[in-house]
Length: 324
Image (cartoon, rainbow, N blue to C red):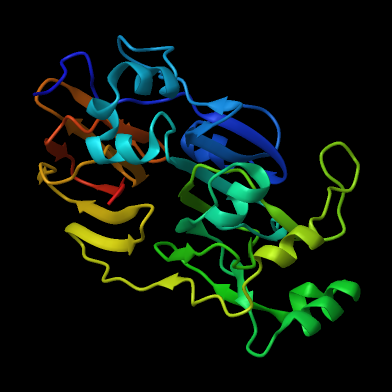
């Protein structure tokens, strides 16, 4: 039975100024803040950056408060049992006006041991890319710890990393330990485990926002790095209408919903909350008791207690995410 006090929830974006950030999140998505805004944390349970509801009768409640009040009605029984009171995923929009640092992330075991945290498995969906935009993803064939150490000492780590040209709609899955960097001229949606642990190994010899050089984590990275990380590019059929699976992992399942008319979705067999990230157009998300507007650059959390959802639109593109 649906808890009538719950409804699809929007949260106040947590905007992060970054040395590599730009103005597109403000210009295109109305994320209002001055400065070089690199990230909009749309839904976060990361300590110190807890998301707050922005609309409806639960306005000003935090995601942590909602979990404490509603538990499995919000999260799903299986998710609540597995993660307890911790919201398990972090959702972001990222604007890279300049190259991000070259970095990697630890897996669950290493993150637990060293940081008492989840690891960081993540995926990207490219929303916009300039003509020459590229990602750095994974090492060239034949790179091992010895050649890696030599290139680090020579300040030439980029010379042994693969570059991937990208266009709108490209998607990538980054397993922990994969060396990577988002290149300049890219706006993307990011879905990841609830973690903010990054091992930075190269930062383009530039100072941070405070004028000082940012820390590198070369020694930490050695414990996490994977020289033979799998191909990160996700290959999927780009259907003009309907639901298309993009990514399946133990941590999240992501599909692309392309809508040119009303689409009705049955989540009765999904024991998880659903998150919609709108990556194109606009739509009305209708449940049994509510109708909520969502547009490009916005994110919506649908509590697990809702089994039936209708999307009313003529032109929406939505990433659908839940815990499998």
